[in-house]
Length: 117
Image (cartoon, rainbow, N blue to C red; front, side, top):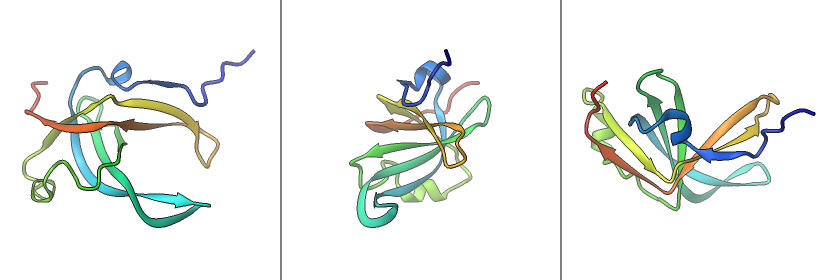
């Protein structure tokens, strides 16, 4: 019997621990209907990097229409921004290449001080 991991949800913290993430970018998240993007914004998508492994991934915060981090801060690449997410949950799914992948959603994002690694 094979273990089916599709649709399994787990706290993001169980994978990366409590370490802050480096914010790499923020984009508006739009609704899709029948595979087509609409003009309806449904949240924000934050691209982050795990600071020890440098693995990059996206976290969706639904219902948020503006970035919680000011645009000027996002554009200033000379100063890294570190963040954590509230109630971050990862969910497994099959991507278009039929490979197991993970999507992450959270209820909020907050900036934190630079971590000591």
